[in-house]
Image (tube, rainbow, N blue to C red):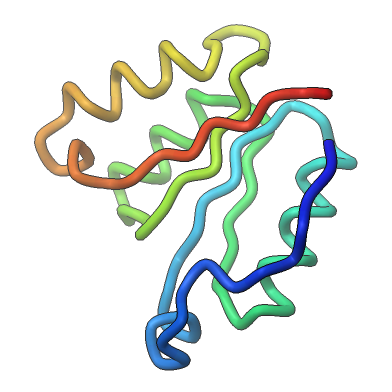
Length: 100
């Protein structure tokens, strides 16, 4: 996965208060994204499985979700379907991650 470290928010206050959820079954990808986002001032919660991320999102909805498409148990599309079907989570933006 190739990434360019650019801020997701231009407003410094927004960046420091944003909560980003990263969902990927690849631990190296999770660590890379977590480190990059934290350096930009974001609060990051990482999950290796979609069902764990969904349970957490229901308790504490994030501002943005970075979601791997190819995962065991539930793929990214299935996780996104549940997010969009859940009223409290349906407005959260989702960015899909794909392997190279």
